[in-house]
Length: 139
Image (tube, rainbow, N blue to C red; front, side, top):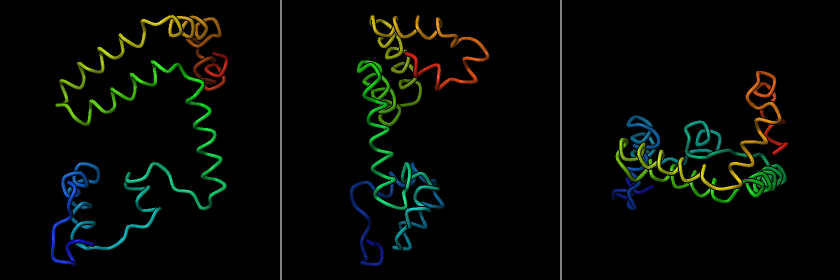
């Protein structure tokens, strides 16, 4: 809405939209001053998902929260740090940070127990990989 008002979008919008959408779509969004509907925003990667109603949204959020809560906190912390490092660091440095975080995530007793359980439940087999979600749910 800023360009139709005669100003530039603030808060880094031009830079961040360029990074998220590419130059062409960022130009369209910034220069046009038009709203982007939820379906388009999802397709372009501005939204993770869009839902038609609150009930579906709530069900998805509840299921996702329960799933994440079942994972080891250290693995979640390391994964979040790695994703954020990719945003704030040059690519090569982010790769180094990712490797360091990988090693950190594998050191804890819970990671060792879960990896052993994964192998015990056939996670390294073709059948285990074909039914990966079921295999992981046994951890």
